[in-house]
Image (tube, rainbow, N blue to C red; front, side, top):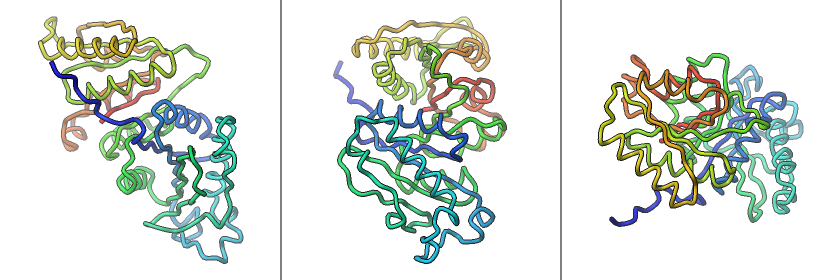
Length: 306
């Protein structure tokens, strides 16, 4: 059998982390930076503020006059400046990043949003963006404009709305940071079936496992006592891929309702990776999907791969 080419080049990937405030976004920013470093991906940071009310009806009109008071008129820029300084603290060894300075001369309006154009610095690969409007819509626009591969966002109390919105409308893989405890010893849990996204999920999982040293488990769930050739074949391919990467893997085969089984098995000490649904958006809205229902019912971090 010929060797299959990887589905992606890690160094060509672009990841986007959404931050909302200095007070609440540090865990999301930290995880975004960690995941970007795992994949050696370029890293965008986006702040989405409310239109008109937060920006005083400015429609992100960055004139030279208001740039003199940019940190007052545009509080989102203050959050982005904070994010840049936090990234420096997280990577003290990155001398290129340490040299980057944030000032109004780097702020430009383009493509319907504000972009902080940082000086070219070898090894930084960071974008800072300010948008205004509805969160999911603006994230979708930014992902489409810059062709991001993965969006990283924090959890939400309104989990049903969040789950439907991000999984249906964001055209990228999505990582939702829920109750992540950096002091907890997590296991990586890959949900393996015969869907088209499983192979890419496995490749993502292998990179994360190698970088973070987390134990790996795969879980295949059948609604009946019979596991079809597609499910068994996908599980074998996943196990083979991990072994070729020098990664040990535990395999589990359980029967029952897929989502209930996923959630119960994951408990509170797994980091879930699963493929996105192949259902069309209308069916997902009406009936839900495995990723939507899993995200609604679990509190652990979850990466949904497209």
